[in-house]
View 1 (cartoon, rainbow, N blue to C red):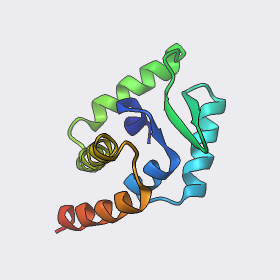
View 2: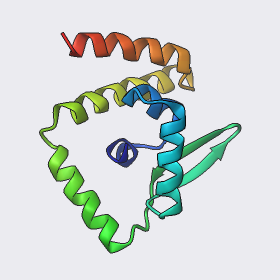
View 3: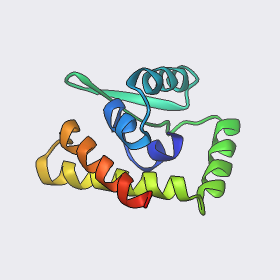
View 4: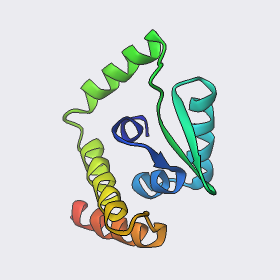
Length: 115
C-alpha cells in the first residue's frame, strides 16, 4: 500500500482493487497511517484520496527508503504497479477511474500474471 501511495495519489477503491483486499481493511490501514502522519488525505466529492506525506519524520522517511529498495526486484510490487498504471490510464481516458470497469480489468490482468 505504501509503495502505491508513493507513486501517486489514490483512493480506497483503487487500493482495494489493486491489492485485492477488503475496503474495510484498506480503510483501517489508511486511517492508522494517516493518524501516524505517514500519509495525507484530500477529499474530492465523496472520495478521499491518499498519498505519502511530504513531511515525513526522519524515521518514517528512512523506512520508506528501505521499503523502496527492497521492492525493486519484488514481483508482487511490480505487478501492483502495473495495475496502478492501468488505473492511471483509465483516469486519463475517462476523467475518472470507474471502479467497476477498473475491477474487471484488474481481474483480467491478475489472471494473465498468474498464468
